[in-house]
Image (cartoon, rainbow, N blue to C red; front, side, top):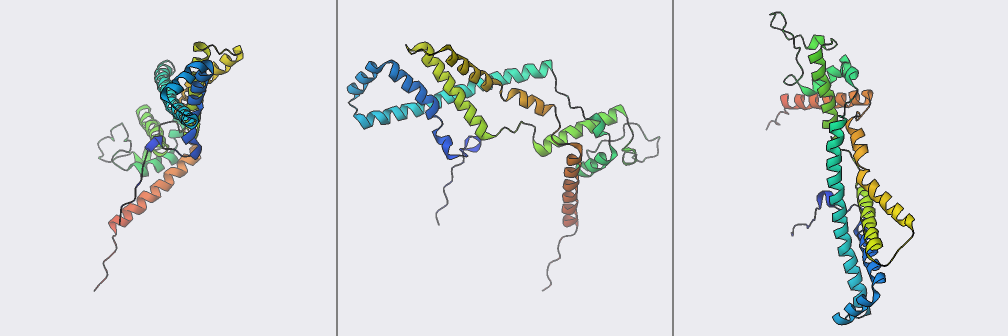
Length: 263
């Protein structure tokens, strides 16, 4: 049997059929705009290449798609650079801080988290137990201490990112759509300033609005995502209980393997 052929594009894969045609939007805007601005040059070039009517349409389609991909890459590069600089400045000037210290002090959550973390990395009571040789951590889950609380709060935030991810989950459809709309705005901006074609000033207003929004549309939602809890307290506690039960069931299965059937 022949192996099945599969092509995986990873994060750049197309999840909708229409996304294959999105590069025509910015590319067609630029190519058609240049053709309308310089029709004589386009006609002379087609005649010099000896292209017929259908060949001309194919050349326009291919050029539009290729230019659209280039504009899409340019748009993504500019947006990525702007957002990296913006993230760095925003975090430097306004460090994100989650207001959940009181929630991480609740004994119920600490017991559930301790069952998930295990005895190795569960926070230990920072004060010595007066030489008794016993670890009082389990009995003091409801007691408050600065170092004790800070470590538990770190785990409160870390477990949320572990279960639900540390990055802002922006839908792929929305990212692709806005990137191509922004690329289309860059094409319109080029046609507006580099060709005899001139439109109303409102065209520039729309173009600059789309470009500016495309630069920051992920910045502030991601910042709010970083400084906010992924779930409310009760949902987070329930998630820990489910994970703790699954972990306990797995340990019981390992400690009690099924006996082999007797011959």
